[in-house]
Amino acid sequence: MKKIQIIILALFAIVSVEMSAKSLIVYYSYTGDCQEIVQTLTTQINADTLRIYPADKTQHYEANNYAIGTQLLNAIYAAPDNPESYPAIDPVSVSLADYSTFIVVTPLWWSHMAAILQTYLFHHGGEMANKNVGLIVSSHSSGISGVVTDAERLIPEAGWMGDALWINNANRWNQATLIQNWLTAIDFNTWAADADGDVNGDGSVDINDVTALIDTLLIGDTYYPNADVNGDEEMNINDVTKLIDILLKGQD
Image (cartoon, rainbow, N blue to C red; front, side, top):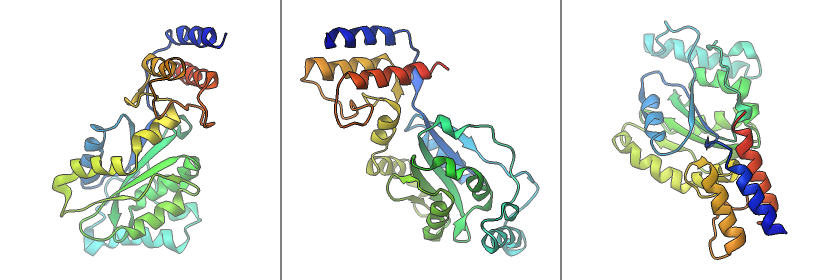
């Protein structure tokens, strides 16, 4: 009877369409370095992107010996809990509830996270709580510990996927390899698959994942690390049900 249930559910899943893995890259880029990082990153993983823009696009943050950028950061750290301390940004309509895995890409501003991205995370970082989060920091040469501290403050209770990746002027030429190695080190594919139902680890959730799951449950000689879709440390009919729920919700 259990085998029949699995087969019926699998046939039901055929009507579903392919759904991209629900990962989101959130970034701000002033000089273009972070944009290049994101472009490289999206050749290696399946993810949507969200670029944050300042409301005032006339500012040159490095002008007058970095006076404007420093002023923005000083305002934040003088009253970090006050929304008025943060510079205005363009409205953002993307719902973070639709995603379970995030990568934040930010430039370093004088040992801290860029003020523009801090604004976004101040208002929305809490929506990433208990979700998988990775951090990539771009700088000229300064260390990134201050940016990591900012991220931990602005994204409370995040499920950090390992250490942040630091890309600087000395290693930027090799960023594709650095990103690839970092994704492997934090085991990104497993994090994304566990959250999104990508059983076979190919970066998308579709009928092939149902097939892979049935192979694991029925044949027994094929095992996929992400077959425990519902995370209960067992592989059974409930995982197929959960996978079909994921597939059907992808049509909404």
